[in-house]
Image 1 (cartoon, helix red, strand yellow):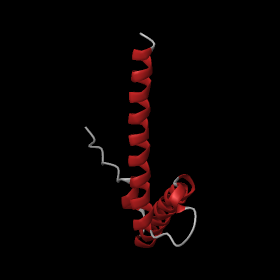
Image 2 (cartoon, one colour):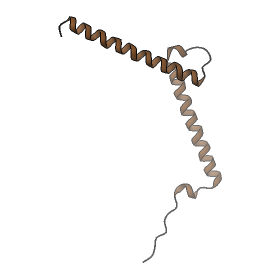
Image 3 (tube, helix red, strand yellow):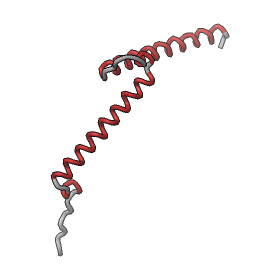
Image 4 (cartoon, one colour):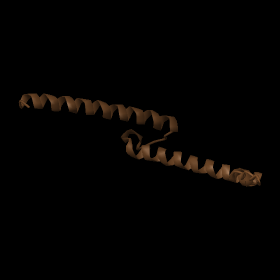
Length: 89
């Protein structure tokens, strides 16, 4: 029987320069995706429409906005329940 030689994983076939280039490209893509996410938050959150916006501020204001939306939803659900009771449903 002839023993089969295990194939090397693709990353083991790359040179160090190729590995480094792949790593740099991956990191740039990751950062670009994060940047797009922050830009989306700036567009959605009303209090972020003007002025200097650090990433920390964007996250803080986004959390505040989400909490406000949750509170509004809770109030609307309560009002809906009250109206249903008034209508006898």
